[in-house]
Image 1 (cartoon, rainbow, N blue to C red):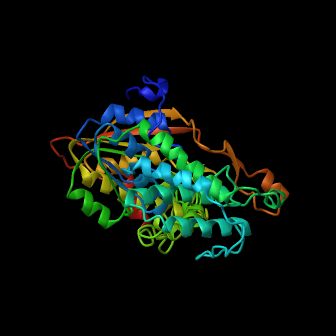
Image 2 (image 1 turned 60 degrees about the horizontal axis):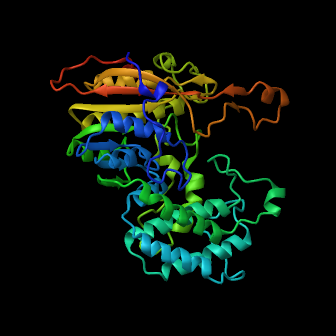
Image 3 (image 1 turned 60 degrees about the vertical axis):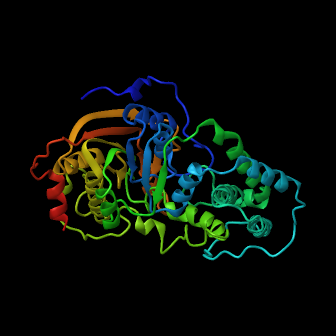
Amino acid sequence: MGGFAGDALSIPASETRLSRWHPYPAMIPDELATELASLHVTRGCKVLDPFCGSGRLLMAAAAKGADCLGFDVNPLARLLSEAKAAPACLSILRAISLEAKSLRRPTAGIPLKLRYPSKVEWFSEGVLVELAAILNWINGLKLGFSERLVMATALSGATRDASWMRKSGWKLHRVQPLERAHWKASAWDRLVSRLDHYIEHSPRILLTGSTKILGFSCSSVEARDTVAGDRFDVVLTSPPYGDSRTTVQYGGASGLCLDVVTRIEGLEDRYSMGSGIDASCLGGVHRFSHGSDEPLRRYWAGGARSEAISKVTSFLYDFAESCRTISAGLAPGGTAVLVLGRRSVSGFRLKLDHFASDVMATQELQLTSVNRRQLRQKRVPTRINRFARSNCAAQRARGSAKTMHEEIILTFRRPCIPHAPPKSAATLTLEAAR
C-alpha cells in the first residue's frame, strides 16, 4: 500500500480550533486531524464524523470550508463540539470574564446537591458552594444560546479541574487522601481560566464551513436513516478501539460534569445524561454468550473460555453496524478514512483494522491504503496491569501488558459503479456469533 504523510508530516504540526480548551478521552492528535483534512477535504464538500468526540476532525474539516455532520452518544462530547463551533460574541464574553474576576465570591452558602450521588465524594464542601454560586450567577446573565454553550463548556472544565478527580487520565479515579486534604482548587478561578482560553484562542482558527452535531449512536437505525438521505463526500472518523467500560469509561467523568452544566437554563434537556452513557457506546450491551472462538480467531485470539469473549463479539457486532452506517452515507466516488488501533483485550490484541477492512469489503468499499503512525500526543500508558485489583501478589506480578503504540489509518473509496462483493470473514464471524 502507499505511504502516508503522517509518517513524516509534510505540513507543520498545527492545532484544530480550541483543541486544548477542555480535556476529553482518546482525542485524535491535532496534526493528524489537520493532515487528514488537508488531504481529503475541499471547500463545500460534505463531511461526516460518526464518532466525533470533542470535534477535532470536524473542526479541521469546517476550517477548510466543509459542511460537517457529527454523531456522538456522549452529551458532553456534543456540548464540546457545539461550543467550539458556536458563533459566540467575544465582547460579551470579555465583559463576563471581567465581571467574574471582580465579583466578591461567597465563601459560605448552600452547597450544590448532586442529582446523581455516588458512593464516594468527588468535591470538597467549598467547591460545591462555589458551583452553586456560579450556576446562580450564570443563570442571571440571560445569555444568548452560543454564549451559554461557551459558558457551559468552561464550567464543565472548571468542574473537572476543581473536583478530586485524578487529572492524569480520564477514568474516574480520585486523588489520594493526603492530596484531597490539602486541595486548594477554586471553581471560580478555573472557570475564568477556561473562559479566557476561549476568548484568546477562538479567533485564531475561524470556521468557514458549517457544523451540526446529533446525539445518535453510529450503529443505530436513526443514524443510518439520517446519512442515507444525505450522502457525504468524505467520512473522517476515529472509532472507539473497544467497549467504553473497559477502555476510558466515558460515562463516569462525563456524568460529573454534566450533572453541573445541565442546570444552566436552556440546557437542562439538551445534554441530559439519560440512562447511562457507557451502555449506549459500542459494545455497551453484551448480546452474546460464550461459544466457539473459531470465527474470532482472525481478529482476536482470546479463546472461547475467556470472560471477555461476550464483550468482544458484542463490540464487533456494533462496530460492524457502524461500518454499514458509514457505507450508507458515503456517496459514489466518496472517501472514508478510519483511524483505528489494536487494543489489548484480556492480553490479546483485537485486530480492529482487519475486521474493518473485511466489513467494508461487504459494503462495496475498496481499501486503497493502509498506513501506520506512532502514537503521539495521546495520554496512553505504555503498560497496564490486567490484574491490578487482585489480592494475589503473584497474579499482579504477571499481569503487566503492553498497550497500543500506533494508530492505523485505513482509507476506503466507494466506486462510482457498484458491484456485489462476496461475504467476508467478518460477516461469517458475526453470523456465527448470533
